[in-house]
Length: 115
Length: 111
Image (cartoon, rainbow over all chains, first blue to last red; front, side):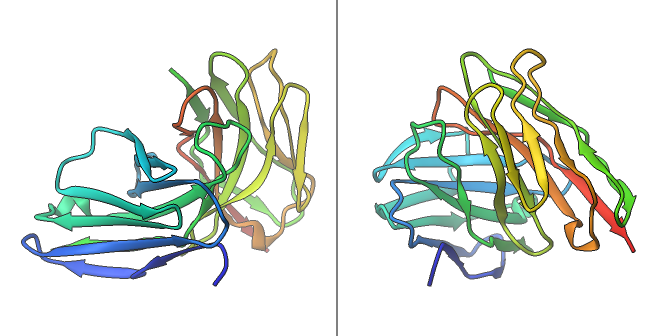
């Protein structure tokens, strides 16, 4: 595997379910990000991790819980979601979160549908 | 705070037409500027970047010049192809952990 991978690619869950999204980067980067992409809305940054420490939490509801066990893996744990949480969830990585010149590398996303 | 403004589109062109997608920004200091492209069913990927004033980023026939005096980073291509149909995002990174993205511009190229 190369680049940034995300699993699953598609997920349908009920409002009472608990599920997790997984992201893995194979680039040796130190920063990882979760984004939410909804139709007709701007890209929303949810969380930023730098060297496994969460450095930004962009006012995200507590039903979304991130976890970064090491610099290569990032999870987003989901519970009691709402239909408006249906969206494409994108994971990204970069060499360092605090350096402005580094670009981000994105995974293909997980298409989440909450029923 | 930082912000990026770009036209939402869709921009509809015929093949081989000239493309311009405008991007202007607000930021303190000296941010780095990026253009990302998102093809249907995929994540975003870097198209080009510029890290200081007057730098020109270029890739796959696309170009953009970092203009500090007009706070702009317009994307151009001399001759678009059907395969360029995608959504294009202007972004900046400056002085914080948080990248700032524009709302994206959809480009549709007809044969």
